[in-house]
Structures are given as structure tokens and as C-alpha cells.
Image (cartoon, rainbow, N blue to C red; front, side, top):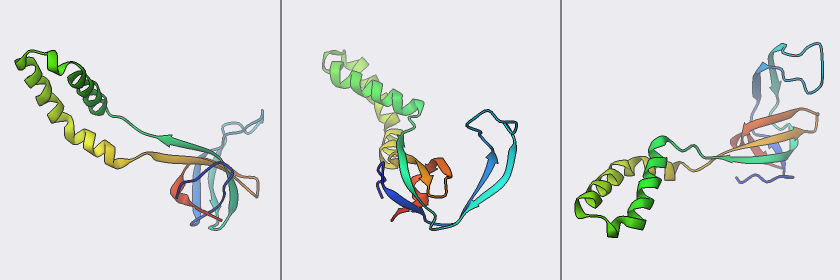
Length: 129
């Protein structure tokens, strides 16, 4: 499902949150640790932000760089240099293919009707209402 800003959503399953509390205003409880918070499946809210993340490994960046070099200047290179470059590009092909297949990771910020805000949550946690 492609989530969009303003879309009404609900939690698809009971969700347990753990970690440190981030206080938005000056407070004596700054840095306090919460044991856990549970939000029930079906809790509704509105999507406030959608972020696509694509992690590129060093190998993927190197593949893009070398492929561009080969495509732009390969025809002008000496045969030996071109062959070495083609071999290096071919050796990085599996990483490039895996990167293309994985697709982006999408996270969202949702403001629930009960006032809670869940940020940087994976889109698969939600269904549209």
C-alpha cells in the first residue's frame, strides 16, 4: 500500500513500543526511560509524513560510477582498459541487481487520534481506513 500525507490509517496489529522518551518541551523528565507502551490494533490516525529510504552500499555506488564511465567513455578507451572496466562492472552486477530488486524502505509519521505520534514507523504497520 502506498501511504500519502493526509491519509487516514489504522494499526494493522497490536504494537509494543520500547525505548527512551523524547520530550518535546523542557521537562524534568527529560531522558527518562519508558518500560513500554502498547497501542492496540485498529488505533486510527493521520499520516503526517512519508519518507522513502534507499540504502546504497559502496559496491552499488561503485557500479553506478563505473557503468557511467564505461557508457560515456568506453568507446574511446584502449581495448585493454575497456576490457578491465567491463570485467569490474560485471563483477559488481550482482550487488546492483539485488539493490534494484529490494526497492525503497518507506517510513511514516502518524498522529493518532488519541494524541500519540509514531515517527519513523515502517509503512507495513498500517492499513488505510
